[in-house]
Length: 213
Image (cartoon, rainbow, N blue to C red; front, side, top):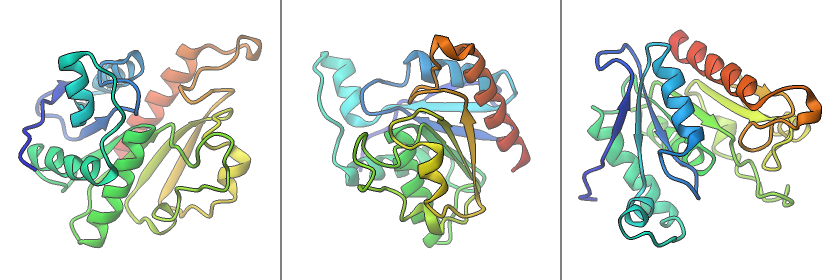
């Protein structure tokens, strides 16, 4: 794949760790969610590299909504980004929803190739499509050795605490639960919590995870 990725950086240029973050299926790298995590992690001294898959970059150019690229192209583009950032060694990869899922698949592939990334961070992992708990996307996670952190809302329709507890995830994968959070970690007003609280706690959890690698 010949595309040269456009990468948006936040945080210190010479930080000890870089986290490459991919967006979800419907919104780009500058969504409020992605922006908050990039700025939040940068505030912890972590370098964050955001990028957009080809379909989203094209949408930014012509304004036309289009579906995500085929899985093979998304995964191939992840590899392009990883190489542009200096290779997998020590690099933390991840992202929001679909972007994090693609990162997790690449992490598993690179592990099998004996060139693992330093860590994996998934924000709102789509364990299954909403309302279809039998269509699981966890097989590659169940054998993952690469250190990983999944940040998930307790009300996320893509995977709840009770469901995730039954998936047999390995000890290499930690889960941070955002109380009463939906797929974007937002709680209901009745919970007494705010979206900002959930987001701040999630950012702190990711920072601790990355700093401990």
